[in-house]
Image 1 (cartoon, rainbow, N blue to C red):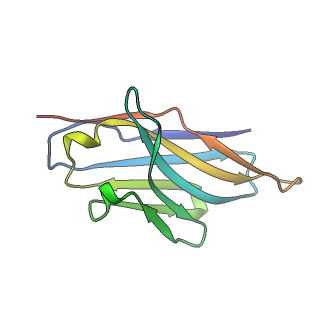
Image 2 (cartoon, helix red, strand yellow):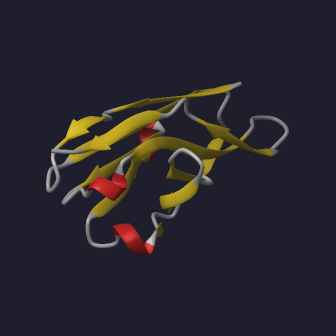
Length: 121
């Protein structure tokens, strides 16, 4: 089993910054990709940013130039630096990891519990 523990959410004013962290632990051989998704009530969960094991990144158009995703492979941790935050960035942010299991080599997707980000004056 694998656990993803998120931290760093909260309330921030428009134009402000927040940094989210997500640490993976448990039965991990390797992690293919890690990413951040977000969801608001009544809407589907959407990709915000993702980073592959080779460090290539992918961003939603709405956050390009404002958010930066990075990962610490040694500690199985992914970060999301969010700058110039807007009210429309308000959502629950979820961490995702694609984990290769030991022994079997099978690939599993895991989710964190979610952390609330609220951008409001």
